[in-house]
Length: 131
Image (tube, rainbow, N blue to C red; front, side, top):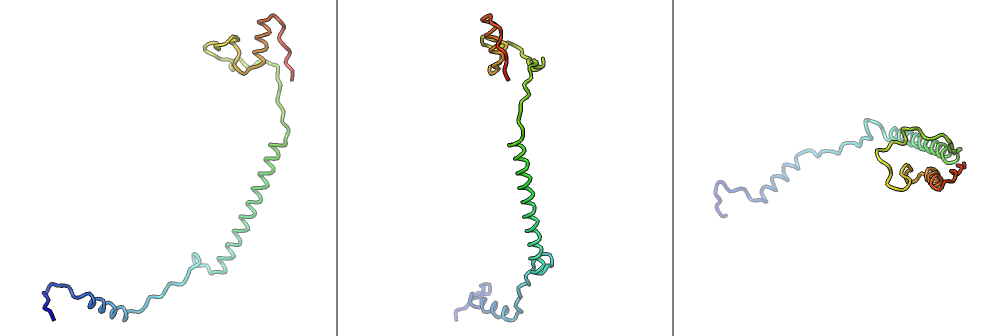
């Protein structure tokens, strides 16, 4: 046998043999029994799952029914506009300078104002607004 220095590690096969001998003598650890959550049995867990499944179905049904009722009211309900001939309140016509087009007091999409402006320009009476 070759001589070894006192500080040299033991051969690898010797360390593996020692490890095998030690682990063979140790008791084997068993796997922990399977827990179904906070101490419930499998039957209790299944009953709880079925209970929450029923709650989910009930909640989904109530939500769907509420959706149908609300959307039915929104889409099929009465829809009307109040056609009021009174002029808008003064606070709705605040501007710091006139608009840069011919009828400088009319906003771009205000068709009633444009019709009145054109009628005033031509000297004809303003057209009657229809509802």
